[in-house]
Length: 425
Ligand SMILES: [Zn+2]
Ligand SMILES: [Zn+2]
Image (cartoon, rainbow, N blue to C red):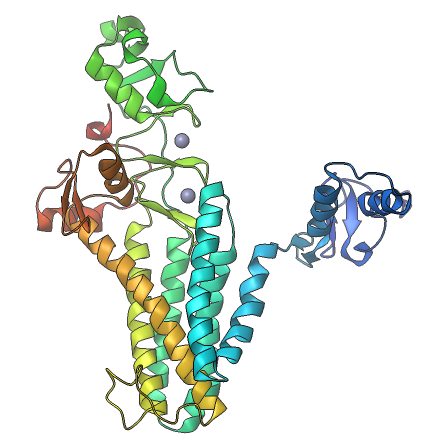
């Protein structure tokens, strides 16, 4: 076999753990991350010659740098998503600063949620996908657990059993999160299970479905009834108003398919999801038919573990105070840095837990009324739902069959990827 030159690598040769295909399709090595950056060279050259930069020169340099930030992996070096990094640096730094003094604690613990919310609305508006929130959630859980083991347990007020319960809770939360991340259940177009296949000729890919004029659309129905009917497979009919309302409602002009009712298109995941509830930035995935139960379980496990952990921390750093008031009044807690850090983390965990509790309450209400978060938002926008308790409860009245039946349906809805007959238009 002819030995190949290192300058002309075989493109079919498998990548070693430190090699990768760069954004231009060339084979590269992570050891060469600082070599041959043509974009940077050109930008520097222009800067030294005092020539104006190209409009995209900065974005090209950034794209090259982010493309070269990689870690070795079995199937070739993997790219590091830069949005993973800020929580890993900022969270420990800010919590340690907050533990220095009560006033610093108040400032940091007020600014931190504010910054996270601002970044959430910033990315939400751009419909961008980011790993920042998943990284923050996972790292917060890991870091709180690490501080619990290294700062609280050594003080001697936590028994082995209590430590075991917290550890078990953290493990169960992570297992449940892994199940949730397996996927929300992607919607599929009408398939062979249906009694008829409907082909819509009129969708305009560059127009929003809401702008379609239903009265002018025609549908082709390929009937799957009797053999005679099958022979006459395509019958062109003028769709009536009601039919076109359903078309308009269920047609996804991006996925180019008629999705089952209750499915929705996620503009962040760029796909249609079965019984879409919402896109959750904290798990970087949609919550839909297949993972809604495990999502609720993750929330519940996280809340129980977090509340138990906070109570253990407060009992340890404020042993003489009432558990319910210790978070607000704990004299002498800033005398020792270790107890101040534990107290600050208890406050941080309480803020996160409060947010999660709010989300859990909304979820429980929605499930009880058999309404998804998406349907509730649409009902508010289109003023078609019944709003109760200052908007906390939105009842669309479309799918609710009573409290017990709604919960039974929720717990048994499973992960069917194919819509049932009654789900179709
Ligand atoms: Zn879609
Ligand atoms: Zn999504």
